[in-house]
Image (cartoon, rainbow, N blue to C red; front, top):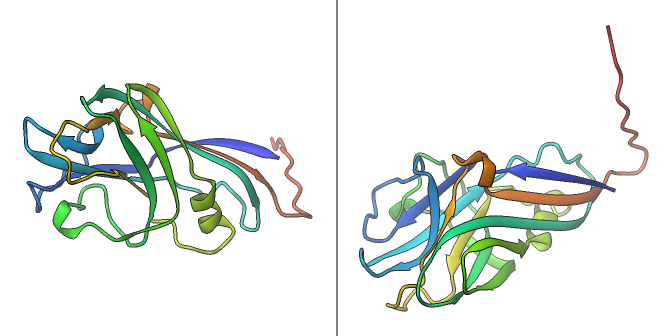
Length: 183
């Protein structure tokens, strides 16, 4: 078995009160309701999985975010598989792609700190089941609440606390990996 730690190649938050604005270059991603701005946030996160050989069997996959701002109200936070294309500098609330709740991951968040979701089902969908990797959606369960549920995490612009995906896999049979020194 092999374990790889991957860091997001694209991430962007979107806000319902700014349906045409893009926030992909900002240093944070959010999910939840922010009372002061009366805004609801979601975030899109994408990883390059090309280092995992086709035909591999995925045995573990964990998505980790470092939450540094926690709202007043705890809530369940979901990670879902995105089903359409988006770009870090183009996605907005008004043009956000769809997502599926199938194999989604949930975690009850009631404090700041590093939080991890078991996203095994989603990563298996991409690697083993042939679904296109459009990335993850991060959102809260109760988007209709008006209490402070927002959580803010560091985006890929913060290398020391960037969004991380740890994947453990078994390469396909007959594939030998060997380091070779030439020169």
